[in-house]
Image (cartoon, rainbow over all chains, first blue to last red):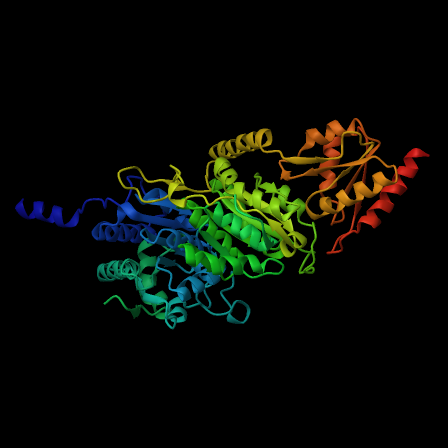
Length: 254
Length: 355
């Protein structure tokens, strides 16, 4: 009984204050919920909830502003880093983070993320890479793997027609304005903890006035991939992260 | 009040914005307005303001969105092709009810067009421009003093209606020099912070600023609320100038640089015994329909003149409701009609009517 009580306190952590009571509306097995929770825990631990602003994207996480218990807005597709730039330049005392998917950040929003990173904007970027456009029904993303079937690459992504999977951290790591840069997954408990640590550093990069912090999280989209949740999580670990190597690319936070 | 200073149009607008309390400017170089961006780059850092040259006009408008979310006065300036790129963000800002001031120093279009003064962006400015049901309040100066005065009040109008406001100038207004008198500096410290801004959910529920509601019935409510504001703007914000209309038998309607040229034509025509007047809309949206309708009942015809192939003339026709004949003359592509050219057109039509 005593052990059971103890286990309860350890396992059933309280809901982070930085999340609202609203239940996530994401599909079963989707990793958005895990990442939302990790971001909220970091905001709680850094005690910045009262001065944090969320810039949500267009895509599945367009509703993120309903789940985070912080002030927030929704940017036009891909433009979150520009919106965040405006906020941060006008109110440097606020903590501003964007939450963007791969279509948002790595296709339509490449210009905005590259220039925000190059300017070293003091913002934090949570980048969810799940290899498809989830919200619109599983179309090919810039991060879709070669040969991977999606609704707009029904015979598999062909590099001659569609180009190659885009690697954002590998692109941004040379930018002097970037203060923290990592790629992680949440496909097992160790990776979850790594992701949380990375998210914390991505916020500290901003708070300590060092530069832009970005974490790419390789995430499962069971619906878009036509897999069940367990299979999808396994696929992140065994296939997806072979193309996209996890690790820390830049760490000026230390 | 300060003494008159000889300044360029773009710089006059910039200085007026600063005096109105604007300390945030985001821009991207494009002729013929780059001097305004340069002016703000020189001026703002010296008075504790924020200047940033963005990577594109697409980024610019979204930076404005961000600044407006946190409740600060913000502005940008561009020219026609750049203004096209901003339309997405303006549509979002209108729905999210975010105030900001835009300046479009119009040049010849469509496409890359040229860099000469033109008025081809009237439809874009007054009929939407971006997607969805929204309006921008559009102010069209015809002198530099008016550019200064309209810029100065544009921030108040934007905040009053929580909506983007556009100063629609053309390359002539942007590039010429004239003596102007600047208004007093607004004390930025005393500007009241709106109660809807995002500044951290400290001791209150989180605020959300979005242009989004997945439920069509809710979105309809949002849009009807916008329309309610626009009806109020139509009641309160219509501005125009009457020029020699009291005894007018014929009427010109024109705005901006074109109206300025027509004042010369009015005087020339009157020397030749043609009693013509001019109505110059200052707000292009809301458009002074009623004033033009009143005049339509009294004049032989209305001649709309534009530096385009005819855009504002459609609003003139809507105003007139068939009560008189509406004629049009225009030169597109950056060609500016001369006073004598327009005088000849006027005389031709007057001759037809008199016969």
